[in-house]
Length: 463
Image 1 (cartoon, rainbow, N blue to C red):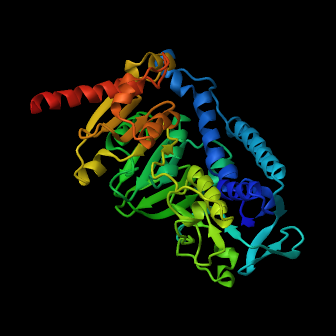
Image 2: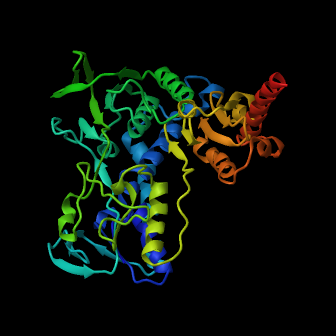
Image 3: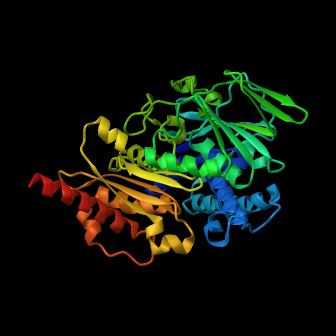
């Protein structure tokens, strides 16, 4: 098996095939072992967020006062030191895992020569060699999409990849796009003290999330002086000696030090010569696959961001493993549809299952149970009085229909709800369970009791 790309999907495909006794090789650029996820995406952005939280002391201000700050003059060097350390360690881990499983790593850029052969070009010498394999997995990932009308320079007009190489923390910033990446960076720079304006052509942000959770996030970001311009489209971005000017179609003009575009992602397939393998990509560079992650050419698979939604590191890993198992004739279960979503804004958002709006649209009755962090001893201890956990419960069979969390540790907490839902558990399991005290996990019991009390009131009325 030959895997093109060494991100989360490519790694897991290669290692799974190697553990099944296949001879495996991975192709990637020498400076990109670990893929976009490790170098410009998931890992650096989440490490940057951790550095921001630590250095600004933002999460401790409920306890120590609104002026509390660990470091007064936070520089980009302060922020990137932690990122470089983590990325370096993670690259070593990836290299070690591939080596330990006897996966050969070829440095260079790959493109198809024919359906079973990839031409590997050495980016330094320009020399090419041919690699052939019985099965090929495309795991090339994505890059930020860039509108043709915008002149990006990587310093004042940037995409989400360039943010990590900023020379200084900007005093003001315009972020175009209120999707997941845009809102994660908006909250980070707002926490650093940048005056952030978010421009979004849609009427709202993060429409995949629970409305109450989104409203809470919006409140917190406005408290950090973030300005939202919903229903607005950017007409032009002008570069000036002292910064940028973002002109909206409505006529508004927004001056700022920098502009960051977060306009979705583009599949990295343009240089693959897919036509030589009998394949094609759509306008966004994405490749179509079946339920086994096979492309239209049965021995060629594609996994990760390059196949589109949900484009998460976690799902990419599972797709890579499933593709390798299928290619090797090994039985593999279908990926569970209960995939948790984690959004690393400040505070975090995470959910699994359906939202209130989705259940209402589907005419599915539900009752909500809520626990607020301020009611929990652990919430008071860590200084998070704003977090919350919401359970959506079926009044018919008392199963969980959705779990939504907002606040510290949300992306960790969500897995309790995911496990209960995945095993077909009911709200009664959470009512009768004993959780460590004091913990945030205790929020499940509080929310479950809230939901069952509401269900009891319904039953009394019915009687």
